[in-house]
Image: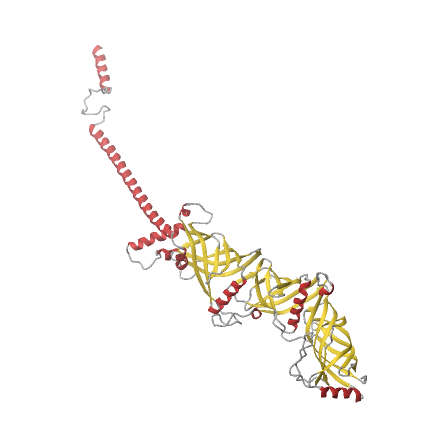
Length: 611
């Protein structure tokens, strides 16, 4: 039993693994777990391989990553260098090589304020950065130059846009005379490389500008004259400060780090003047046409109303803008003035244009306004203006805007095409003639009748107060060949030279004749009035060398059973009050004189001649 137990115990120990100690041999026929040593060696070799593989792969990965990052950094640095080069380009190079524009296609005058005009300009603009930097694609050379250009194009595409902020821009003539000042907000323009040959790549832009024209009218007129004579608008664009940076106007990122500032830029701009239909070609040597050639008054209407004298007009103007350019103009105020004493001008009307768009070849403009309340000093200038207008004489005016009080344009008010016949059907009823106390002159008495018809568009209410006739008297009807008139001056001193045939007498009173008038509707588009005045013992002066004609006429009056027919031709001045026209002070100061109104009539003189 004991042996059996010992055997069992020995067997049990033999089946249990032995404890591994520091003294356990490393090399045994089998492992402590019963695993063969060859398998353990294989496992250890596999683990080492996997460790070496992981190390190798890690090294390859980080090496590749480093190389990629290095390559990317190099590319980015190259790209940055090109982007930085673009930001360092001078504005002159940008204008000469890089900026491509089309237009402007539309100009809208938004509004006007004291001292300036807001306008909005539409155009299409782009910057060919590839041309500036020399990186646009060309024929492949298969060299590093192509790689260099590719990196440059990549840098431009990274930058995408550039922005520019300009201080006030001063426009000066070639003689350095200031023409105006332009202010604008910062601009953002896209940049590109390899643009197509057409303009399809350009980006539409809409730029608001605030323009302040010069207050020196003579400098502006001289600039227009010089430009027309040379056929080229030549001006200097002076910019004290220009800031250029990468990226958008209001964005703050890495692109905005590329900045450049230019000082005191002076860029000369030269733009050829296009031909204008209806005007001489610019640069042909002919002077710039006067204002009357540019603007024609189609029709106008002046109406007396409870609010005063209301003005409405329809004018057409030559459009000097190229046909492809659209332009709109809002309502703008203007003051019309006429020459006063010396070099002064007297304001007489406040008008404004209706909003309009430019059309070709002429522009139609509607104008409305009113006659201003006039000072007593304005009566004579206004009288001269109207008299010259009715006589088809040159009539200078000055046009200014209350928005630009220091800037005015001298112009000529368009005249009528034909001289209107204001005084019509002139005759003297119940005319009597008698010798004066010396027997050397005849004295005439009677009632003067005439019809005063204002030109088309003058629908005024008048009150005729007095007349001053200056008349030649003819023996019989006035010859058709006679066109000359007696002097329109109140002094009666001047006579036509030579004297017309059959004219023998001259009627010119020493004082104005009192007159009355009544409204008689309208005729030919203007209001009409009957005018009457009495003449009492007005001398009939015998013209020099016409004593025989005078004697023949007197003989007809005395001995003819039918009396004699006398022709009347000359001019008259008429003093009127214009109803609804406010004049400071009123009374005689509110009277206006229409001078030099031609008249033509006939009078029958019977046997009422007394010796």
